[in-house]
Length: 324
Image (cartoon, rainbow, N blue to C red; front, side, top):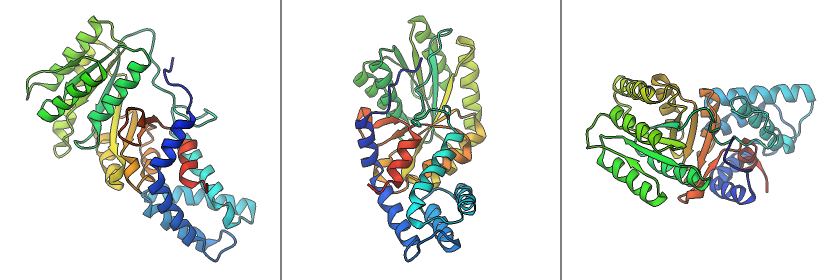
């Protein structure tokens, strides 16, 4: 069963604060888009299209949203500009729900990963380029799993960067979970094998494997991830249960390009989008989820352990487009 609870008031406050820069930017643009207009017409829609594209939602996803709003305007005959925020919230939340693991959840929250009863440990392979907050995200996830009473193992399979192994070990000490590592330059698949073997022998609940984030050589990355998966299956035929792609939301459309490149070399099952608190590019969350057809599972809104939150599409959209 899922180990996370409901989206609480404290989380919503953190979300509102974390998305403040994006919200202010979007609102300023929206205000200009409807200036002097009382109803949503072609000019307003053209302006809205520009607002969404310049808010890093992305061209293709923006066109989908505009099309949905056009249908609504056509159906309702008259839509005032005052209703535009509410309509945007509805349509974007509906778009995000289509890519959700949990589309019928009334409060819009993704569920924590289900830990199956028929096999242990649950294996999460974490991918992403260097510098996006991948190792930090692993550390925060490890903490959250441990807070839920789960036994966690970490695997330092980014063996090409001493800093990555060292950082993961620091997180392991901080959280109080074991880290399996080898010498610098070791075969990443060998580290993954050792991690799963140790975790299985010690009856662990969850394994998080850090991987190298080199995208300049996509063939090498694809072969490496393929080898890691094959080797893990020798220990656990079901592994990995998840492939989590970590992206830096502050890079806007560059994060989307990274997502497309990773999706081309390996199957991605969920997304974590970090560093949203320091940027006005939060709209990228909408575009990436829509274009990849992969659910956003977590968003990062600060440095604290609890600032990695389960994504809640309804609360996210409310935070972006609410007037209060």
